[in-house]
Image (tube, rainbow, N blue to C red; front, side, top):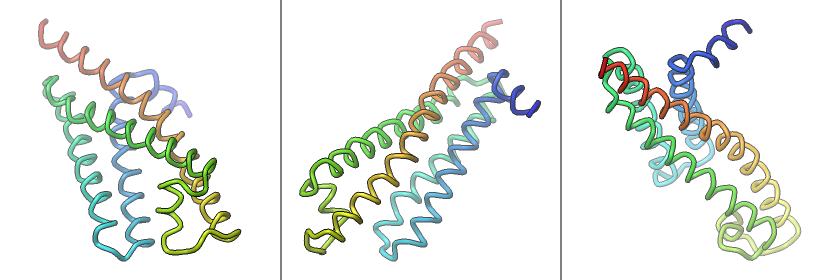
Length: 160
């Protein structure tokens, strides 16, 4: 616990930890997508996001090590992208919960007719989407501020 407390107080460590955590969670999402979906098209999107997250995490370490502020831009962009994705997931899932005939509810349901089983499936899918998306959103919001602080810190270091 002492290490975790130190990590969240030290901005450089926090930025690194959040970048690695984002890449790790993106990898977990990719693995789950591969297990659940057999279609190539469902796997491409998380694969691209995973590669971008890993690249952004590497850029954070390089930015801090070499004091190059521009290398923080990829992780800031990925944080913004993650925030947008999670907000969209929360909004679409909330709409699908409220309106069982909505676009996202129909997407989740697939070819199944609207009945009690499909409504229950949509409800459980939406709830299981909203909870991790809300957690990821809060971590992403914290992350973007941490990464922006590091960007400014590195710029200050370069000036001095």
